[in-house]
Every structure is written in C-alpha cells, then in structure tokens.
Image 1 (cartoon, rainbow, N blue to C red):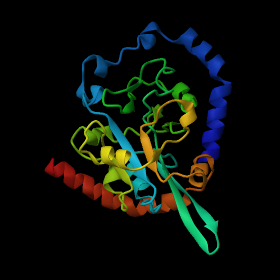
Image 2: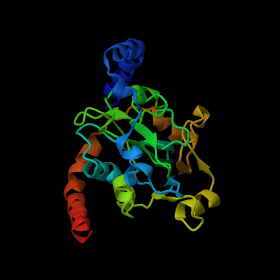
Image 3: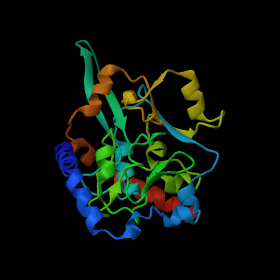
Length: 269
C-alpha cells in the first residue's frame, strides 16, 4: 500500500504545476466559485456542532494492535479494498529479555490549521465549526492537491468515489450522538473521542492529566489527535512501510460483526 501511495504522491507533486495550468485552462468558472451547497445552506452536517471541539486521544499504553479499528472503519465508511482511513503500525522494542511490542494508530489529525484546506481549489475540503475536517465528495473533483499538501500522508484518492478521502471522525455517527466506529470497537479502550471544550469529558481529563504529544509538531498544523506515551521509538513507525496483510485478514473477521451491530443500531435509531 505504501509503495503505491508514495508513487502517487511523487507523481502528484511533479505534476502539480502542469496540472494546475491545465485545470485553469479547461475548467469552467463555476468550479472555482468556492461555493459548497451544503455549507452555504447551513446544512448541520456541514456546519457541525457549534460550540464543541472534537478531538481524539490515543493512549498507547492500552493499544494492543488488534486492528479492530482498522477493520470496522473500512466497513462503516465503505473504504475500498487496499485503502485505509486508519490503521495501526507495530514494531518490537527493547532488547532481550526486556522486549515488547509498540503500536502506533494513525489517522487524519484534524489539524486546527490544516494544510489541506487552503490548497483545495473547489472548497470541497473544509473544517467544520466543531473542528472536524471533512471532504464533500459531491464537490471534490479529485485533483489531489490536498493529498500532496497533507504532511501526515493520511489522505488518499478513493478508487470508488474518484475523489479525495480520509478519516472524518465518523461525523455521520457523531452527529447522531454516537462514537466513531474505531472508538466504539477499540478493545483496549486506547481510542477516546469527545468534546475538549467540555471539562467533564474524558478527553479533557486525559489531556489535562497526562503528558500528550502530537505527530510532526514542527509542521505547525496543530493536530487535534493527541497521543499518550508516544516516544521516539514508536514515532519512527510513522514513516515506516509495513505489510498490512494482517489487517486484511482481520478485516474479514470483524466485517460481519460490525455490519450486524450497525444494522441493529439503525433498527433502533
């Protein structure tokens, strides 16, 4: 997966200037209107939950690398085969006999100052008022500017929709008062999601009780995905290439169970 992504990113970066010129020459003025129908109509799913600021805390002391988050995300969000909105990379740490596994869950960081937003020529990528960065795939034309701009490489070109895609904190569930699918199914309770403006929320208490870190802080994008117990050895996993065969195997095991859970929630909703 990573080799394919790296090739794609390299291609997009090299072709940035020529592609931009071609698009300017061939695209109608309407595409550059920066009008987002849903947002302009104050559609709640585009505006978000005003007054709230959603963040995620990943407690690496509790992550066991089971990939349940990876699997249910693909089912919940209909992510195409061989593409991922979130996944967990792993490594072995220490020296015998003091050896243990280290895990790094990865997803969109929903940055406070997202690099992906200002480069989007159509306004399809934007940040809701509750901090969730989303992609309107009815407006996105798949130019790939945002994919190249993301310093975390957490965007991809969705093979099914032909648009840019990424984690949206399962906004479709959050707006119904539910947790993101990855949080709800996290066996170890490592993923915690909530409104950091609420002092009684678990995310607020965790951030104010423990030392937290973010990935690539020097980029200045102010990520809103916080890690507890992130050390330099685990952070190195961020740029590693790793086979996701185990994820694919696990996916089949979790798919049926999650589809059943989602159907039950729908029937009772």
